[in-house]
Image 1: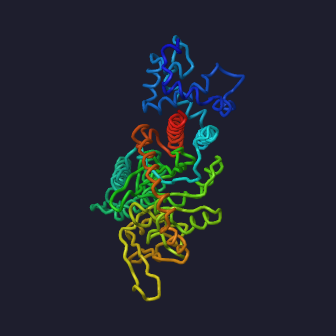
Image 2: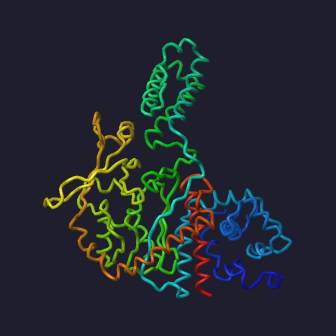
Image 3: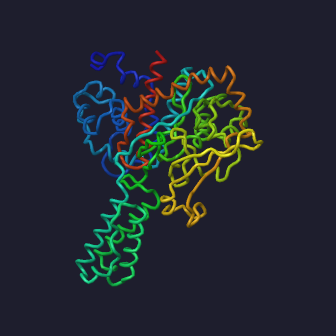
Length: 468
């Protein structure tokens, strides 16, 4: 019957014919108990449910409902027309229990790359690298609002136990300054914590611990959210987003060969070694890396030169840094044109210093928000107490980049640069077709799972298109 009702050019039929899904069973078989409890749903079928969710960008409930009447879904899931569908909650359990501790991202990318190589689709020896951002499922909450609310809850519960305390607690902070609110909350926590009889009461202790947690989170990240793994990143000097970054490498044939997922404040350039390593492990021969200015750091050039690889990435004054202090800690954000400190804070201004033609390299000095430095959890060894400014300087030109400056003028560089648009199109497909613009769950582990399924789908679709 399926041969009659499912067209030969149906996407799900093509995927079923392209790939042998027994690799899913082999990977997950040890996650099931073989001698206890009732029989579980086939891990291959459960995986295919998740695949359908990603292909059609629908919810757990909708994918299960549609698989009850859509013959192409039933065919793909290897069900008979009269078979009952699963309960949608089973998909959640499958993700949490069966896919836990599985490196699904690298597993699925490796599988699709091996298919592409086997079919002779990948002929180029270049990888194109870039990062795309994904918004957190949860919006960030203003830290000062959280602190004020937690402090209010503490005062309320304390007054309910001991009204005398109303006259002895530190005066409330009346302005909208975060540093002042942090100082007030610190004093409030210490004042109540010093009263052992009061702070040991369960309802007081509970609210006090919530206040402590808010203080620590604010000092660490300056942003609070239900998604504790998400961070604030910058798309430009005046545009930010809250969530994650997916760092991707693709071939000129637009097959994704490697991916890493980080929180949003991480720089693009430092991810290049891992993307290159994974791509080569997946069987890709690489003689050229194509990227934007974010990848033109000295360490990336050094790594590429050691492996005989050319880097097609334009130099930027902020990247051609030569020798600089704490090079492994301060990342350059090419979208904002600013450096980001180890705590994830973006510089607010930069100034060019030094005279031209003086025989000495000029520098860019980046200035950070001193108010954030005062309360930063990483200020020890970075910010000197009492200092009126926090700066970070880089040289504009260095000897290490002379070869790259010459290479930039070559015909090969210009020709390969024309391929960079391909990864922008791939990022757009992930977001606009497969819902990768916003995280579907909380936490970086779930983000990695979402990324694994989305990349698996776009690679399969690309293979099918090139294999026609």
